[in-house]
Amino acid sequence: MRSALLALSAAFALAACDTPSPVAQQAMVDARMEPVRGDTMLAFGFRPGSGQLDAAQVSALRAMVAYGRAAQRDEFVVVSDGTGGPIQQARARQVMNSLSNAGARWVGTKIEPAMATGPDQVVVVRSAYRIAELDCPDYKPAGIMNNNEATMGGFGCAVAYNFGQMLARPRDAAIGRDPGPADGTVNAAAIQRYREGRVRTVRPSSTTSPTTMGSADGGGMATGSSTTTSGGTPSY
Image (cartoon, rainbow, N blue to C red; front, side, top):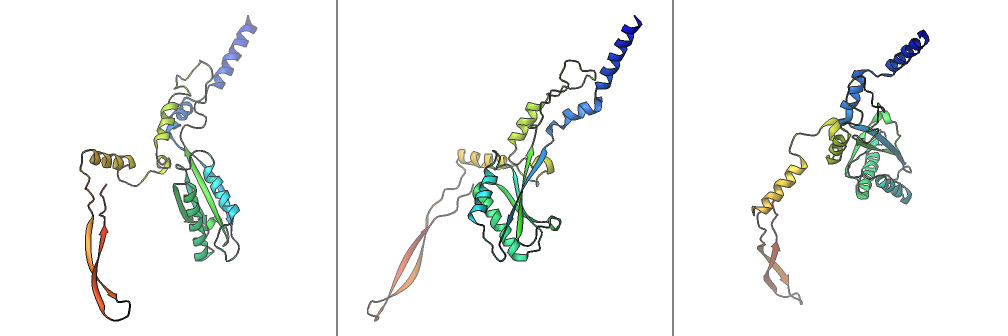
């Protein structure tokens, strides 16, 4: 009888040791809406005095942008250390333009002396911000027993994932954005004005300017007029 009680006590003790802290368990669920950042880096070297990318480097840039399905949502920053002066910045701008042409949307440049790239090199950093795409749900605890009566590990994953997919720029969930209307608000207002017929109609306008033309034999001068038709600018 005593041995059975000792075995039962040991089992309860082991179960208690396996129980996570209720604060830590709840914190895992509360962090569902927090974006997780992952960086990918690719360095590009230039020949001294050259500011052009070769065909292989352009292909590498396109492959970097095409990887995955989030080229329109990830951040691309071309980083240099500033030691190359104007030519290094021109190289960074060329890489930035190549990224944009390959389909990247959020592209910029940055001077970071700590990167220590050298004057003939720039580094492309692709930052991905993911919400509820990694380890969600994590199925912890895997069993039915929930000693802390905390929210289960899979709770809120669908809501958090959908929230992350609706963001035009997932980085906004991590560092915010400049004050102002959201992109969808501006677009919706323009569509509403169009439906209500409040968009200004574009009408052609004619301007007449005198022109002087010389005769073929270099003699007399003739004065005429030319008409130019230009369209106005629509308001959206």
